[in-house]
Image (cartoon, rainbow over all chains, first blue to last red; front, side, top):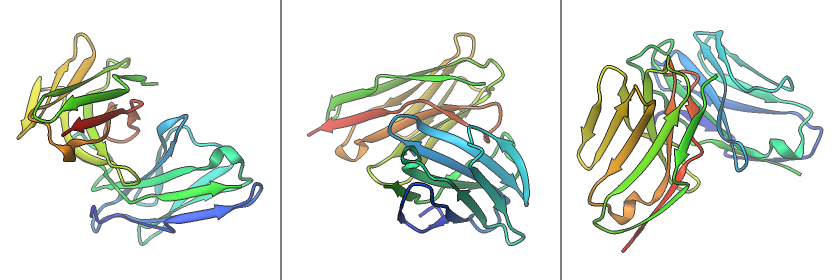
Length: 115
Length: 111
């Protein structure tokens, strides 16, 4: 157990809908990262938040957004869902801003199925 | 951005033999190279990482080597065991955030 928690574990929804995925980092970690893992795209970095502020952006679609709250938990919002958004969504956390001595620890993931 | 290629995509080894997975990267500024192991339906777990100021790092049966000139790094697993069966991902980044992952190698250890 990495100490990173994610809810829900599974999510089934329909195209066009909006969902929110939640992540709580390890105690003391200030950074949260979101990743999407799909069969065709592999594991892709979406976005990083550090202490409430967006820090780095990867291949995140405009239909997706994220935020990190004062208690450091983070939410990933996916809207206007398409079939291709079906994937495993992982969050990870690290202690600081992402410095050279840091390690990312992954949560158990949320499996999203868009029908 | 960074582009990481990983080979082979699948690897089958006899228990007790060694397994080697190789990755190449494109961005010469990358200086952090972690390896993650992911069992079916579970989270990626960091198994070892290396930074560009060292050429090799070992942790029991696992070792990673880095050649910055050639921009490639490799994972070596010795004396493989059935519990080593999993998907292994390499990654590269200038910083531990914004990791770029390889496509993964499915390792099967035959008993």
